[in-house]
Image (cartoon, rainbow over the protein chains, first blue to last red):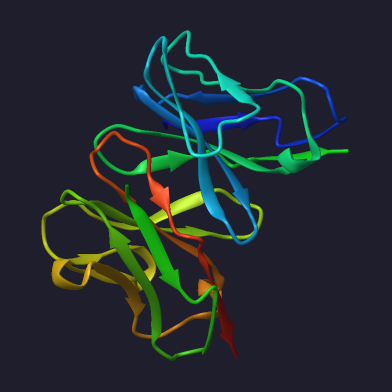
Length: 110
Length: 113
């Protein structure tokens, strides 16, 4: 069965470190998205991509970057982790229908 | 810009009672509308979606939602709540089949025995 997987599931990092969260999908979807979930805010869009070599900023993109070198993967990089980036991060993909979500990565910045 | 408003961050119902979770949206084009459910420490699972077919949409686990264009609403209902329905529910909108979903802030449903 097709799926979307995120790794790691949990990570603790220190302020100022660079962190990369992985997202891999086997749906063969062109469109992939990164969200962060915080209490009282729901899910907010960080970055998204409509295909290889395409990336776009979302609502809360400051301090984050993505790259898309193939259809399956959209890694999210925190250039210099800050305590405000402690959150649960979800990756999703879709093509002309519902979006499928990964299980999430809980990131703690200390 | 699209937006979603979910009325009530927390709704509590008795087991067997009607569940009603409210969602209003704004969109400049015919929208794609979704309800997702999230159980603790899990990802989001699709409950149902509206994509310009029938205005009454049936989903999984006995849930349904009605698209009302005049009210810009897409409220989620279930006739009889079960304990297993306790979760966080998110309404979402997009303006096309491939664009990012815009989410409401979520409604936490508690079911009381």
